Structures are given as structure tokens and as C-alpha cells.
Length: 579
View (cartoon, rainbow, N blue to C red):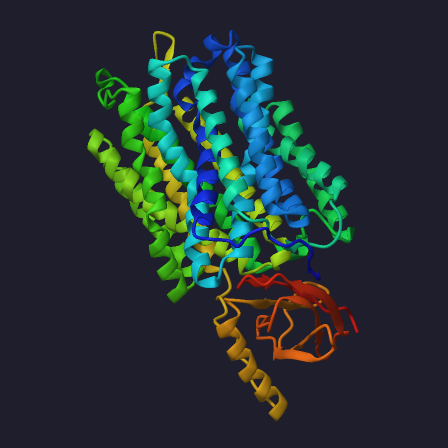
């Protein structure tokens, strides 16, 4: 799949890009956990039945799940910065709608609009890949991936404080203000990426995926209300399976699909996405259990009797410690690879939940659990985008990371449904009020531990990452090209073209000759692709070039490309046609 660079950034990327994009991710996370402190009061606040009030949360989940892969694909096609700003703008509009109403239906509309902001995470990761040199990319993606937990951890105590001392609508005004700041910073600091995917937007694919996701997630989130064996729940699950199957068949026949299922089926992508579901499950269990345990009255015999604000402060380190491992992750990943880092993160999570089974008798113990789990989840989350980025073409970064973010959301949705069912079925009813039990809390932690164990098994199946491309010369010409490749690799972090040579089916092509031709038709550089298909070529100056690639068993390829200069590398994957 050939990619072209048609737009030129208006300004060079500088040091503020990473914190600005991470701030956008934090704003999105704040939006997600905004209503946690007032969940139990929503029926009264919205003058509705409890089962209807839950749609305020369900609508955000559904719209976020639908928007994430779609906005990622739109970013690949039309510009990731443009779609990031659009996502945040829709979120601000939704927050203002919610801030101005106490009507249930209008509130659901506002919360649905807010869910579109979920696309900001994969779009931010895609922008980082397009703009940053490789030595900065690992820690930057780690920070961006962890921002969802950082924002969630910070939002809990702040939202609880606002809910206790001000009108609850102030929560939405605050979210709108944060979103507006994120938009302004993005406009002034973040340049647009020049990387574009070919083709057009797959509207039928987007509609099919949206329908399948809604049909799948709806019974997961409402199954406890409808009954897990009810005709409605089972019927929706069956319909989801049918729609997603038909959607998959259709996507395999589309020239430019919304989600490239062939790429998604690669072991590196497939097992990363499956492991992401397990990480999502483990992340959400602690968010559901600890706040309830901390706020239960001491009269229960096991409740810790803390206020809403204190409970939020004790759980907040979960998010903060997710951010701290970013530099640690970068060093571990550089030395051992993201697969090893993911495994280490999962092991730390397992230790946290294992210790948590015996650390539920004092408030300070909740703090210890939060710190351990935050560090483990931060390492795991930091590894996921690096695994995806290393396994897909640059032109599919947004869509692939969007799908990975969706997998995490599915994990948190499954976690919410399963843990909610466990706590409900193990609760004691006193005076008509269901009170969660310590047995239910411990079973929930065991479920999280089991999810981590499954994630570890999946992580072990990830293929070993390739080191720097190993070129084996079989002739004098290939030896010279191998030397040129090493020199280009040293320069390409500053300026040049880099990417992978791929076959028509998306598999890497090793030892393909890649030649750079300038506007006068002269050879400006040449190299051989590595075992993983990767290549790197420095450019002597900005301007128009032709990249030609050829390999045994494949047809030749010549692609017109433009380098914008500004001391930066341009990612460009080359897809060889069938011979």
C-alpha cells in the first residue's frame, strides 16, 4: 500500500508536541470518569428510573467504541491533527449540551457526543509516529497511551470535590473548558502530519462496524438489567456475531477497507489486541472495587468509612503511577523490546492483585494497591502502541491504534459487566439496600488475576521483535548497498524516507532494492530492505523524488514522493505488485 505525502507542515514539531498530545488524552479520560462520583444520584438528578439513567454512561461507551476506529482511519486519510481537533470539538459541544440540561434524553445526546473524543488517543499516537525521531518515540507513545489512566485517576477526587461543593452541572463546564484548552494548544503547537493513506473512506465498512459494535456492547452493558439469558440479550449477541461476520467478509473484498483485516490477522497485531482486552479488564476492576470498599461504612465490619473525596485521593495514585513508568518503559523497550515490557507489566499487575487479596483492611493499604497496579498497568499500556506501530505500515497507524484502543474499551466493558454481576450476586440486602460484600470484592480481584494470566499467555505468543535490519551481502553491489543502508540508518532520524517494503498481501519483503531518484533522474541513494522489510534512505535536500523498489518474485514499483525538509524523517511504506 503506497503512501504519499501531499501536505506540508506549517511549522516544525518541537518539544511541546508530546505534552500537548498527552494533555489531550488526559482531557478525554477526565470526560470518561466525570460522572463516577454522582452515579448513584443520577436517577434523582435526571428525574428518571435507575435503569434509564444508566444510558447516560452507556451512550458514551457506545459512541466512543464506534468513533475510535473510524476517527483513526479518517486521520490516516485526511490528517490526524485535523481529526484530533474535530474529536475534541465534538466533545466540547457535547459537554456544553450536558451542562445546560437536566433532561434525560438531552443528557444522553450530550454524553453521546462526548464519547467521540475517544479517538484522540490513537490519533495522538499516530501523530507522534509521523513527527518524532525514533529515539523519542518510545517514551512519547508510552506517555500518550498512559494518559487515559492518568486523567481517570486525577478526575475522581476532583470530580468528587466539585460534586460535593457545587452544582453537578459544573462538572460539564469544567470538561468543556479543558477541551477548549486542548484544542487551542493543538492548533498552536502541533503541526499536521504529511503522512496519508491512499484510497477513500469506507462508509459501508464504517456503518457495518458501528452496527456490529453497538449490537455487541449493548447487551454487555445492559445484560445485568435485562437478564443474561433473556431473549433480548441473547438475540443481540447473535445479531452482533452475524453482522460482524458479514462485515469481515465485506472488508476482505474492499480495496481500501476501514480496517485491514489481513494486517490485523498478523500474529504481532492479533495477540497484541487480544492481550489489550485482558489489560482493559484488569485496569477497570480496581476502579470498581476500591472506591466502593473505601466508602462503605465501618459498621459493615469491613468498610473503611472514607468520604467520597478521600476515596478519590487514595485511588488517584493509580493514574499518577501509570504515567511515571514512561521513561522506565523507554529504557526497557530499547534494550529488551516492547514484548518483554508488556510481560513485565502484566507480572506487576498480577503481584498487585495477589497482594490486594490480603490488603483490604485499612485505607493506607488501598494506596499501596493503587501504586503497584498503576505501575504495572502503565508498563503494559505503554507497550501496546509500540507493538502495534512496529507491526503495521505507517499509513495505517491511526486505524490500527484505533482498533487497539477499541480492544481496551471492550475489556473495560466486559470487566464492568462481570464485576457488576459478581458484586450484585454476592451483596447483602439490608433495609432494601444492596451492600457489596468482602467476598464479592475478593472474587473480583481473582477475576482480574485470571485476566492477567490469560494476558501473559497471549503475550508469550507474540513474535520476537526484529532488531535493526540484518543485511547479508551476496555480491559486491549488495555489500555496497548494505554499507549505504547503515549510513542511512544513522542519518534518517534527522531527514529522509523510512518504512517497509511489503508484498501485495501485506507481508514484508526482505532484500528488496530501494532506489531514490531525484527530479533530474539521477540516483540519489540506494539500499536493501532488511529481514522485516524495513529500509531507510537519507535525502540530500527537500523536494520531489521517485522511490523505486524491486525484488525477486515481485513486480517493480515507482512512487512519486515529496520530502518537506525541516530535518525530519518521512514514513513511507512501499507495496510491490504481483509479478
